[in-house]
Image (cartoon, rainbow, N blue to C red):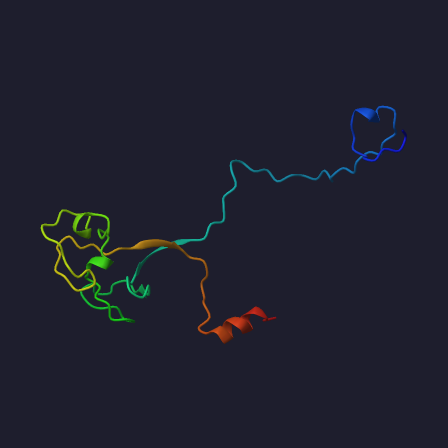
Length: 138
């Protein structure tokens, strides 16, 4: 049984001449101390419209309306305490239910809902044609 089907190294290799494996070049390794630092994208805090999901500019008057769709910004749907599973759909102790969640209200517990998002790209093409042409730029 000199020719075996498999050529793995194993217990039957004691009498066979085997070729040494190629060694990796032994160069100087860079010295590292501690774990690698991950290259994570940056984060930013944004406020989005509850109706059209447009990013609202910082410093916008929250008693006004959305610049794109006209949604009331001081409403229950834009509040951080809005929760459909809570009593009166609010996590704060309010005395009476506000019937329309998308209408302007005068709630004193209102706090705008903001989210933290990752900055994935710095520039977005304005139209589909520009995005297609950017694929084949040289």
